[in-house]
Length: 73
Image 1 (cartoon, rainbow, N blue to C red):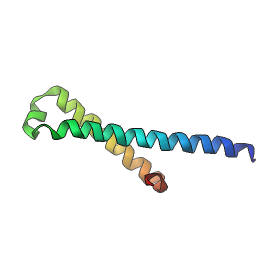
Image 2 (image 1 turned 90 degrees about the vertical axis):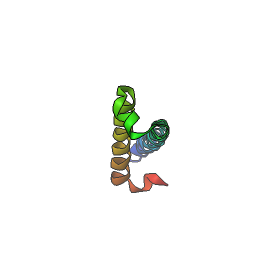
Image 3 (image 1 turned 45 degrees about the horizontal axis):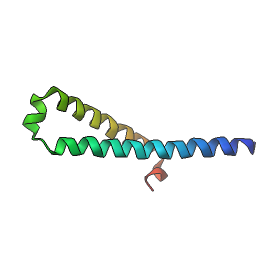
């Protein structure tokens, strides 16, 4: 079963890259939202969409951290 070690390593490395991408995107979207008031966000469909995307990224990040606690390191 040693031949599966390479597969596991590749998948874990990709998961780590994906996690970093999720965090990067979350931070970028959050940065955009921080430039606007809650009122502006509620009145602007594009900002509402960005907020929804940010929240979705947050949920994916929390899920990954729950399933793989060591990923935060």
